[in-house]
Image 1 (cartoon, rainbow, N blue to C red):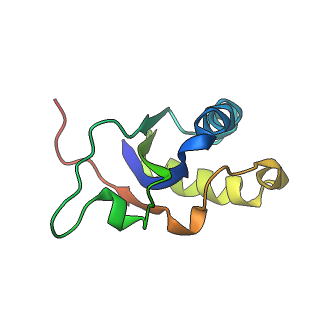
Image 2 (image 1 turned 30 degrees about the horizontal axis):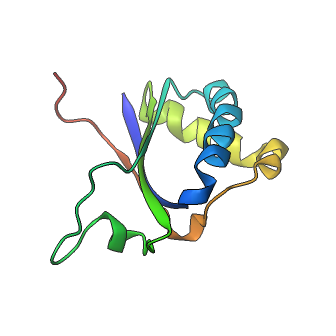
Length: 114
């Protein structure tokens, strides 16, 4: 398994729009090899004294922080899937209801699972 993880600020007023975006994105992501997509909306996210999720993505009071991940069968499938996905013209059709420039993301190799 391989994981792509994300933290994203989304305007609170766009929650339903974001959910609609996810419903459209899931079949597309699955087509390229994503085996599971989990998107979570901020619920109990404390403000830290030194750092926190809000500061990590420069979120303001009108934005919620989302913590999300995509599960792939392997890093090889992920690398090939991302390459094909980014080259697919349908990517242009996705209206992102958030500022993607403040998203933080990365690929992660699982080291423990129970």
